[in-house]
Amino acid sequence: MSSISRRSLLGYSGTTAAGAVLGSTAGATPAQAAEAEDAGAQATEFDPQTFFKGRTWRPGADPTGTTMEVEIEFRVQNTEAPAAYEVSPAEVAEALNELAASKGWPPITFYGTPKPAPLN
Image 1 (cartoon, helix red, strand yellow):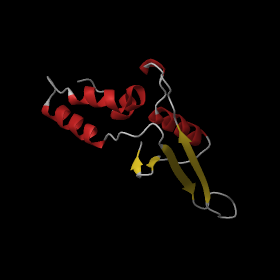
Image 2: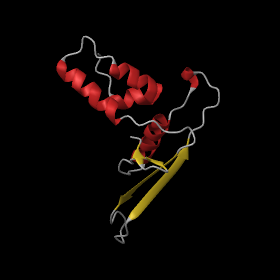
Image 3: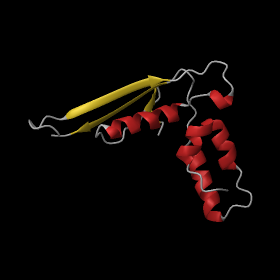
Image 4: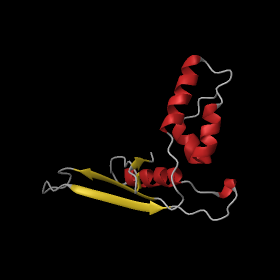
């Protein structure tokens, strides 16, 4: 098994394919097999209609000491797109975090609804 991170694998290929790759531990060291099982157990399948929401804040970040906050919500719909063209929610979450970081915000953890489960 290569040293591909769970986040990059999920962002690239979706949770189903990631689970298949992570589940194939033949030839892996015991530590790699345990890591793959742990990552697979953490993977959550989200319905295609899932809305994701995340929030982050910076306490006292402005001269008045007021807490500033940013909240982002999104949904991704891939309609009859081949796997190579699909945009995953994890990819969107990563891109939004890169944008937020470029503006000085801490990382955002996005949660799927209605069942609150972390995406990233």
